[in-house]
Length: 117
Image (cartoon, rainbow, N blue to C red; front, side):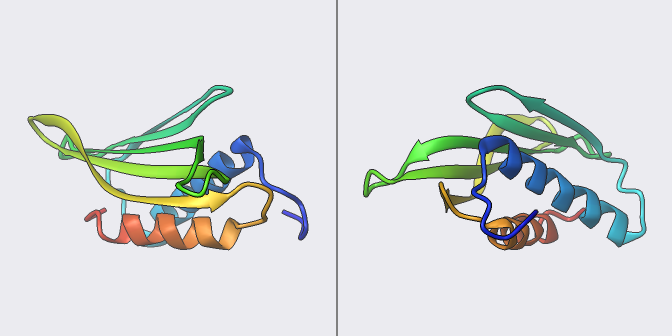
């Protein structure tokens, strides 16, 4: 992505997916993950189902933070086999109108590295 370009919701979702792809390939092992990506005008979702039946759901959507600033919020939920509550494990807010691909990469890699993939 070129410097100075402001991210859209689709750009943030694409960046998160590319980080997930690279992370899985870099590991060099097949975690048995099945990845589903859904997109709409209001939300991008990455759903990863692992071989042990646990799941990782990443939701990306426009949001206003406590200062009423427009941001893209990235939330990650993790479920364990037999427990469908989907416990939120992390979230980050990326300011709209910025080129924050590096922050997205660091956040997604950090979450995945703690997810036993």
